[in-house]
Image (cartoon, rainbow over all chains, first blue to last red; front, side, top):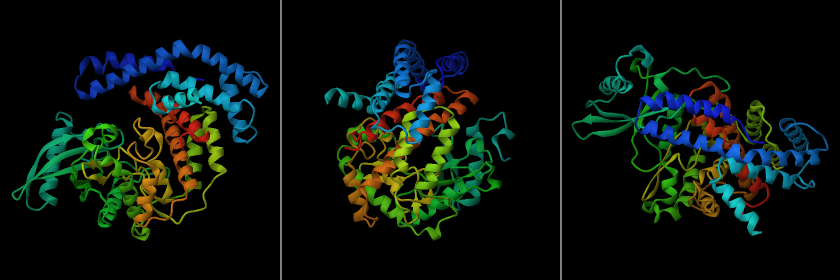
Length: 127
Length: 344
């Protein structure tokens, strides 16, 4: 499940920035914020492209893992509760695979150049 | 007078320069004024200004660190940072103990009209983590940095706490409870975080002998030159607690600036950090406890990122939203650590 803030919130904020400060001011501070805004748009772009399928698969895994039905936030809350209570651990069948798949899918959207993500991909294809 | 709002037409730079000139006259005998007053960062938590103190026997570069806009900030019981007056006291203590730190030259008073903060010596060098990790300028000194960081931490942790200003006591139990509260407040499920809390809870180190802990000792808060670490900055999260917390935090992957194979700040190996620490008189490093604090570091930064969402929604910046979306970076770091990969 992709984290918040949602793409609509991010894009609204970027548009406000582009119409406001970015159109009136210049300098290093604005250049920096423009790069941040571009990164933000790219996160939204990747989310629109990648998240639908990744989240459908995540939902299937969660239903199997928890043996209950519900939407992604509900099932993720339930998963968090069971992990906190120690009812599910990394040794429980399917949990490690599920968390890896979900986390990799999040990173593919949020920060595909992140060092830890690249290292994890290399480790997982290498072993 | 307390805040810049009182005077609108002039720019903040002009106001700060004018008030610094008065401070120079009052508190720096022998100075004839200030010049080149320049804002260095647009940091959200504190403002940093650099200026030259003009003196007949040679100008001095100084730094003003103050609350944003010169505001007066009320401290509350739940504040995590210690406030600039206390930070100045801690810096003085650290400087007196011979650890690399800027020298505090003046703590602002209400009459100064600059808000809360202090003036310290400017230390020349590089603070940008990515440059420390990649710039050829640091190629020669880089292999020595991890050991140096260990030695510096040993010196900081040896400072008698009875001389420290009133600081919060926070060991593993308190810090985890605090983080758990911050995570619950986000009201957003992150099962990897729950797994990490569970892992930490099962491996709590025994209560440590309380030490002065920097609280944010990492690449980015250190000034380097070609000889190594020349100053430790940003003491606002200083507290009394478990010294291993500092040794773990500087190894957290988010502060390696892409150099994952060099756990200490992206420039060195854990063994060098630990050896330097022990050789300089620090307590023997328990490897399991060090890993505990490193994993705690990823969880801590992850929860801090996630906690940016309300700030993003209440504010105007895009940046806070992007930082919030970096919480997941810590989830992958945690998964690697929990799998025994990131610590190899």
